[in-house]
Length: 401
Image (cartoon, rainbow, N blue to C red; front, side, top):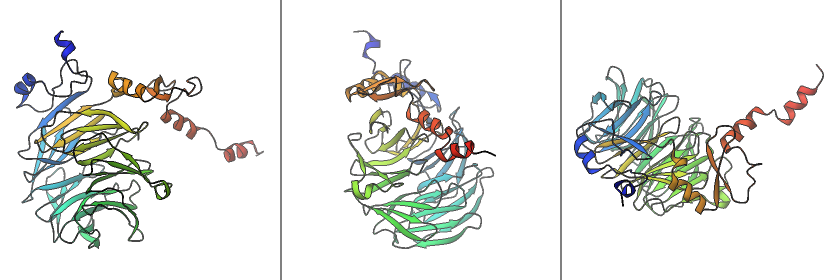
């Protein structure tokens, strides 16, 4: 058998000789030549990286580390552009605002810092009773939400003044593990070691929904862009997708995604187009899920320790991951639907692959569906439906002036 035939078709693990030659470099494409998923490895933190985020139109990456620093990286070159020092302990999470002018960072030193990205100055510091376990800015950038232990609290700051505007002590029965703002910034979802997920309303200042169903710590949560679904990841190795727009989970329960990870799930995130979901795990892998089939599409291997955070680029073509192994990985998944193992997996599920007549991208339909009728993917069908006038609009157009 030839050497080429021995190569894994995905070639997601770093070849030993490549790893040795590039171990001191950052931002180099390190995949083998025949790899169908290309990736870069970014190196520069001295300890575990606990948080990562694409920012500035996916040209930059923000990271927070156990080495007590945050950093901004250039995606193209892999260069660390700026390092921010100001915390005295592990940084659990950091999060940039939409225009990349400011970011917040939370630490085990029981503080949250709000930074000027360009100057590196701390604009204000908030202090808490317990360590900060999670920290995120609203989409508008007006609020910073922080989860902390000891009081199991959810605290919200006004970022313009650095003042606390809401503090909910004993928001959970145990330590909060993650939080996220809804796309409209009117709700905050929090998860906890108590196994529960809560939705807190910023207008009524009350918990409006509580989700239960995981049998272990709930470690992560994320909304899709349309705010139709909420996904929660857990140490029970499962993810659950809750329909929060129609509330069908109340009668039918959530959709459970399983058999993707062998270890506890640490993080999850939807792609912007809603077609995929990425999850990171303590089993050192990143799994990309197909939200059309609700099955694993790709398993990305290469990290040498726990994967602590994952992120999608805005165009859904790239997955970012960080790990306790002190590295970041940038995975190019733009052609994932054309990879033979992905196509074969869909065929084995009773699906066949056809090309969308509009965008020319492959999508799956069941063996019983007529390809001449179902000739557009779900995204092109949604786009077409938005451009078609409603029944009421048609009636108004037909009315005499």
